[in-house]
Structures are given as C-alpha cells and as structure tokens.
Image (tube, rainbow, N blue to C red; front, side, top):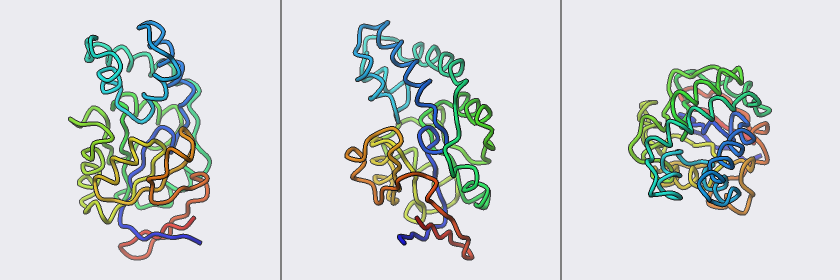
Length: 214
C-alpha cells in the first residue's frame, strides 16, 4: 500500500473536498456565451484558476475587477447543488485542526459559502484567491498555505484536481496527490501520485507526523 509521511496537508477545495463542477460550468458557460467565447474551452480553462486570472487570460479587454465581482455573485447564487465528495468529511475529522488548510482559487466569500452549503467545517486556516497576488499555477498559493501552518513546504502535501494546482504545489516544493474528478488522468501526470478518489486516502497520526496511505 503506497504511503507518505508529512506534517501538514493542504487541500484544494473545488474538485477535491466538494463537487461544485456543475455550478462552475453553468456560470462560465454563460459568461463565455455573453462574451463571444467558446463555452467548453472557457470552462476547461477556468477550473483550478482564479476567476480574475481566467478573465485576464481569455478576455484581456474587459475590466477584470468588475468581471470578478459579477462572477463571484453568480457563482454564489449558483452553488445550490454543491456536494461533498465521498471520504472528505471523515478525512478532515481525522486530522488535527491546525495541521491542515484549504488553498483555493475561489474568493473567500465564495469558499465560505460553498463550505456552508456542503456542510463542511470552515477551517481555521484558509488561503483563497482573495489573499494572494499570483494565482495557481504560480507557487504563491501553496507557499502561503505552508506558511499558514508554520511548516516548510517540503513537509506538506497538496491534494489537487487541476493541472494548474499540481504545478503550483510542485513549484512551491511539495509533493502532490491528484484526484481525477475534474480533469482526466492524462492531464495530471505531473502529480507525485494519482488517487482514484479521495475516499481511498487514510490518515494516521504518528507523533508530529501524519502518515497517509492509499
């Protein structure tokens, strides 16, 4: 059975702990159509990135800050069918509260709303798209996440579902476990290990370490 010993775990939110894909896709498809872009390409690009970075990438002529506010409002309104992935709740409750954090590209307001809809605890430590200058795939989000736990990046592991997040965590200097919930396996090959789902991941506390088995 594969295993990894770490001191802290950094979870992406959407696509890892919660399934918000349907709402995200609806909002970005609508945005793409309104701005004359291809809906499928737009939604594929948006997953795992900050909304403001997606706007800047795909529609640089638009006012990215204004678009971000509108997209945040739409995504909050369209979060009614958010679901918790199997295994997420039990995994989080098995971890010491100060040894894990969420690192998400969503804004803080959106992340809190989706956690509330899903019925998951809002963690004491969370890095959101509202807290950083450079979004994934830049290493800043995961560097900040490790700092939040008071740990060196190399002693943490990231759990991700998107290629941009995998690249971000690796660039920050930590291993990455990837789940193919949003992107196919072929787009996640850079990850340290690929899990079939979060439900197979088990955590055992060994002193100052967390042993992960899958």
